[in-house]
Image (cartoon, rainbow, N blue to C red):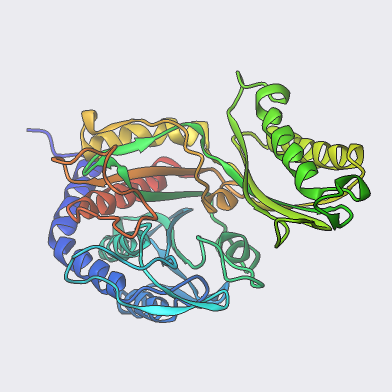
Length: 421
């Protein structure tokens, strides 16, 4: 009778630990859910995480990285490379409308106003799952062939106005150094898949996200004498229509999709006065960095030239947000069989691109990265009809958490074993 190989033994150990920890992970998740904190304000969540990592005896636990981030380093019993696992910690300014017993009733200041606070995107589950993974891998320290870095990141949903935060600042403050990270994995819970299903995509998975601002200057006059001024509302309306031709007429849609949307148009305060100014704000989404830059050029060119043709002036500012979340092709090819081994062959599949954005993309600019989706909708409900992430009624079937723990733990263990120098 052949002895089981080491990978089978490690798989069995991860499953055993994940089964044992399942209820604890759920309790962590419920505590964090009932006590949500906004970006750069995750003080209590960070304390919980740091205390847990120290209790596990990690080799290093750094706090206050990018305001409230926590980075833990676990050195295995055998030499090898370094793999990172990331979880985001922040909640959203959303007032919860679910009826779960651990419903959030927290309110907090946000950008000058008070708001309800809720983990409406599932970051509470991400933190709880990675805490569970840390406990499993700490217990398997002697078998690890390298180092695991646990990155608990603040402000993925963006920091408050006037502040910096998130993955970019974590990187600037050294979360990928000492030891240097060689690859990184992350996941996101989603209502768009049923519980215990995993979705992935090689290459572009989530869009870049940029914001544009257009300040349009006309010349005020009486509404009964439009010829005596320059109407920024009419010119602005032409700009809105002109911007809609960028994707339909300027972009090669056979390569990648893209989006240009004007979401805010403000001007005037009386029906019989043509105002001096109009202001517009919108979003730009792309799945290719070259397309992203071209979209920026088109927004600027169309806005300024239409304004000029109408006798107005347009000032265009574009704020660069998150890059394209693009999974490394080789790392994806390697990771998919691992996920199928953990979740089952039929439970892992390719998902469409999504125009949502993720600052996990900044880590992927530093090292090869793989980001995947973990379903959380009960099997008896229609994924197309349930409330999506960011909804005040967003609901997580907590039986999904154990699969997330097993997936991240197995990816880390297997990647270290497969990438020995």
